[in-house]
Length: 301
Image 1 (cartoon, rainbow, N blue to C red):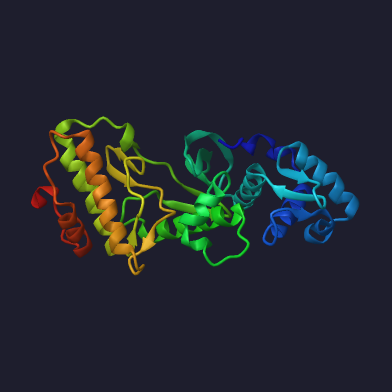
Image 2: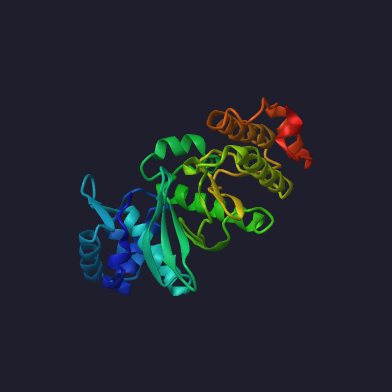
């Protein structure tokens, strides 16, 4: 997990953020931003830039290299600090609390606002950049693509999906988005992978998930990454989360991705609750989900 920078936000001054923003702008064109360009990018004097670079480097917000030229790049913590400052200026959040979850491609923290919310930092590309470049179609047409770009695009795509789906589909309520970060409602319940359902509940919960997938499809979206790790189960039902890889239903592979999602979630329940889940024709279920006719998996034995 990337270090939580909330504790040092009070130490940072406006000019520190000017330098961080300058490095961010420069990274649109190069992974390492030439120090000589930073006065123009940050609108500070060379002397002020030198002082601010030292402050930010000491706090782990930027990294420096001296091969060929002296260059600087943002760390994940530096990018987090820029997003946190924007959320604070917008009065979206008032404070940052404990971690809620850590994944391969995101960190989720509790944040304080008018009520407790969740803050998700996308990490796509920060530690596995080459893999993300292969898998994510929104990087395909860009000759220079930094991890900042891939993480920001993932956040934008997820936020767009949440706004389109909420409240018709049971997804986290979107609150705000900036750079690679999303503020949203906290999940109600526990991750399906960690839930212990009563055996007689298994078919009912599977039906709820597939019904939400059908509603999402009708609203124009396929999740494209369904698993026991992307569904929460609570007293109020199920919530489907983690939508950065979602595709719209007019995508050329949408129907194929829907079939894969259906197969994945059915296979998950079949493995975990073999005595309760009947033999199901996953292709038939996918057809009924796409047609808006799904009622229960028991109709597809």
